[in-house]
Amino acid sequence: MPDDDAAARDAAEEESAFSHPHVAPDVTAAYGDHPDQVIDFYAPRTDEPLVPLVVVLHGGAWRAPYDRGHITPFADYLARRGFAVANVEYRRGSALPAQGGTAPVAGRWPDTFDDVAAALDALPALVREAVPCADLRRTVLAGHSAGGHLALWAAARHVLPADAAWRTSGPAPLRGVVALAPIADFATAEKLDVCGNAALQLLGGEEKFTDRQRYADPALLLPTGIATTLVQGRTDVIVPQAVAESYAEAAAKAGEVVGLTLLEEVGHFPLIDPAADACAVVAEEIAQLAW
Image 1 (cartoon, one colour):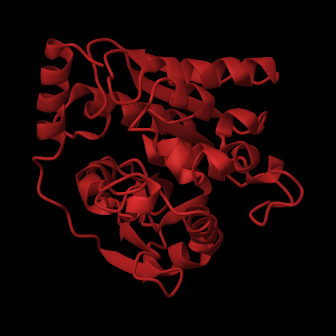
Image 2: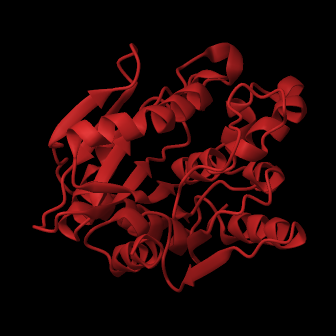
Image 3: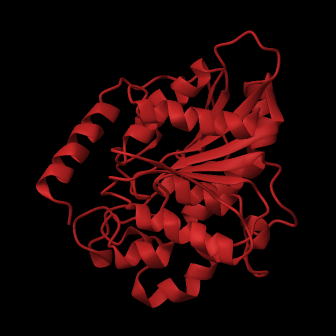
């Protein structure tokens, strides 16, 4: 458990990140029939004829109360820095007492993964209609927290087990992945009780966890061959630094170098807070891959 000072700092950082009004997209397009199967597009605030595309996957522990709305200021921030942005929504967990009490359960199996895979597969055609100035050859996948997990997972679909429905025949055409405080290693996350055992809930509880982990845990889906950078606050009490470090270590053992940018005196939420210096660092990490 975080100490009082750490908890107070985290609360202040969360309040700042969530204080910005939601920013409406320029275009919203559906990639499926469910209301959550949509992507919001933000056109770049620039006159450049062709710009990189950033695909954003929001966090919130895969739980229903946390939708893409809270990350729209971050999406707008990236658009103002010259990127085209696709903010992906996906199905999340709902309140099922049988799976953990009155709090919303994390994720849906397999729906959450179905949606992210379907969104990425539909993206090229949707982008051409919604933001034709987006250069699909310069696509960067970015995600925060649980969305960081989904970004890493989506970039690893070509190394999923052969019987996985989401497996692709080759790597996604990405310039890279920037995962922000990602839930990147499920075993470490469970040891640390990250987000109230959210990873355990995502995979369907203790009986299903081990069988499904190999289909869902980014730390087991290495190497990907795709440039990957993790950005992590050292004072993050939501998804501690140890989770990102564990993923980076797993990548190294698999023969892959993963960038790990550690930010001093930064917690979980400044990474997506346009008012925070950490957000500028994130934008620069994206730019390093995109440009």
